[in-house]
Length: 486
Image (cartoon, rainbow, N blue to C red; front, side):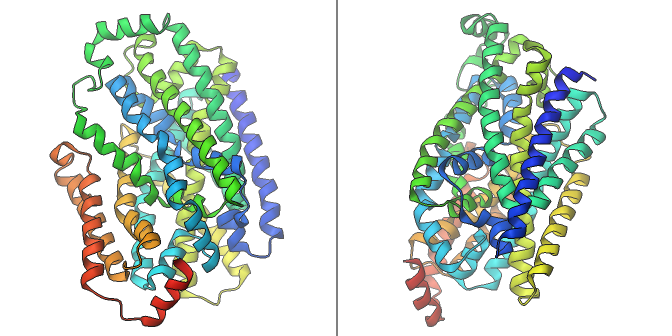
């Protein structure tokens, strides 16, 4: 085991645990356990909000799977990845003020709280909870795999042992500290991600003999590596454009991102987060994916794409610095996992158990159940990740697409269109998720586009058509909705 690499990671883990224990004091002291555990009592400032969005969105696919895909495909994948620059800005611009105001009016803790109040439908809540649980399990499995592979490549331990170490590390601080622990650790992790990206990009350029030399060698390997179309010219303009739905516009429908838009302290914090988040996301996406492409010259012949970044760091940097840099992908993975864990836990405890099983449950019962469910979910995902797929980015993107197809229109049109109703929302979610799974399974890249595009279009048409054709009968709910939402 290379202790010069491992020790900086151990220091990083200790720091994260300390933050988790600090946050656990707030969980004990706050009057409302649910508000604190799942939303940090809505006290996020601008920097913390920006970094928790960056860290949540910057995941294993950004630091492990994405650069691995760039290594294989070339500069075309960098172009595709840069679509994500506008993500944080777009989410806060669309959801920011209105979503937060409405959430405070109705005392919403989760996105499903918002949907429940907006549509007054048990079926909307249950469909939402099932979608979150199913797709976020897939997303969490991808992150667990990324964390396990990273520790495996650094320590030489077996994959299963590495996976176990990662799972225990995350579960400890998330279970005891809740959302505040997630937000504070995300801030530290976001800063580490920014610094790590800078170091690995500079180190790779130096090791490759400069950018011009790297580009020349890439052309010699395969001229298509330096074109927008990829090594096998599979990245067509239509396919690239369709990614605007998956990792751009559609991100509004991701529960783990949307919930951040209801957790900030005030408008000033949101505006600050818009600027910081956009700059940081842009730099990280560009730096990490460029490093992945340039690694093709520095470390040729890598067979498992998801090991490119750990191997690159250990090749171009001194061991102690590689350990610091490799805390960046570890931070990205952990920051995404912790958010997804809380979302699935809140869907089960807050949105199903408290709404429909035991609405009168005591705070003590809710607290015990929340902590227990969070731990059990982590254990289940661990077992899912024991036999990982070859390229985890595709598992992560599959989950992204499913969540977007389910939630984008019930959330966005629920905020901005009075005419939307529960019938439209239910039909939209069923059509969106059903068509996404069908297209993804039977006819991926239909018409040359990513599998999520047509389902998002189908779900929009369905939401509008059904809402117009089937009228809401609960007039009291309509009047209450008008007062709270518009």
